Image (tube, rainbow, N blue to C red; front, side, top):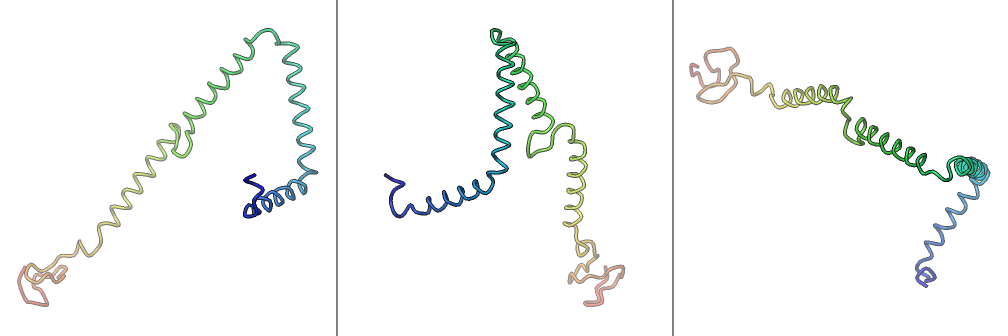
Length: 134
């Protein structure tokens, strides 16, 4: 009832667009789907004939998948770098910190200034603005 209301016509438009895309891709999707159904059916028949009674084979496959997933997540845990790449990342982070520190220390802060007026005097002993000795 909710989807039959008039103000929900945009859902029908979206469904029509998705349907058009799927019809356009049908020559590509159908052979892939047939291939997938075929090899999965063959694999299931093989497993039922050879390992149908014993669950040991399925448990071994499950353990292998879980252990491999743990190993992959330790090496590459997603957005943050893994343990193998940590040395390179530390070098990059150190370089970024040094770069930020060098940006913070501006040239103006390093210039020698007059004690009385604050005018930059550089290497001079007498301020050219106020004439005070430093």
